[in-house]
Image (cartoon, rainbow, N blue to C red; front, side):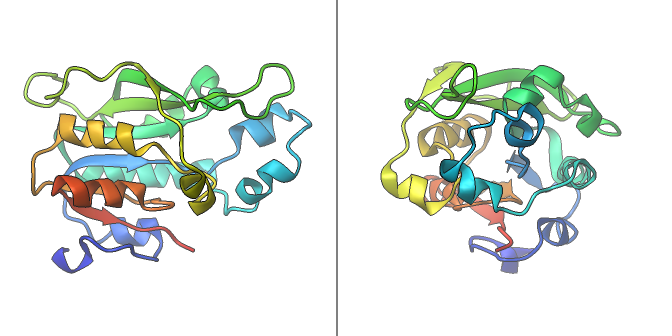
Length: 214
């Protein structure tokens, strides 16, 4: 697996996960490519602003479940999966995705993007990070930073927004990496998008394992 570390791979995330040893990963991020808001809520004003997002490859629920099963397999006991979800999945739940795993929801962070987005009724300004922990569930020794707020305000730069339609906040990602890992640990992102987690790992001296299939 060492040959796969610390580089922006361009292979299928499931193919990458198949090469990872059981219980070898300290922390995982997963931003499944779905359109819960666009496809399920049908705001009606998606338009040109959402063109880049809507043209991305979409994961089926079956594929998302396969990813989560493999992430569960490779995570160490009591390690965390940081799962990005949208408003639809926040309301409807993702329990189906977690069947046949020991993942338990232990916290939720609301990312205030500082910018009003689309919406037919209310306008979107937030995304949600569901914090899942693999059993055994415990906080002591697994979470070492205690100043992370459950509402995180961070505005992306124009460069970050241009890099990928689903760019995520580096400040929050760095805080979570510091909270849950030590230098030299492996951080996984099998749907890496703009590879912002990779950039954070380089700054924090963590090993990165991740891919984004172009």
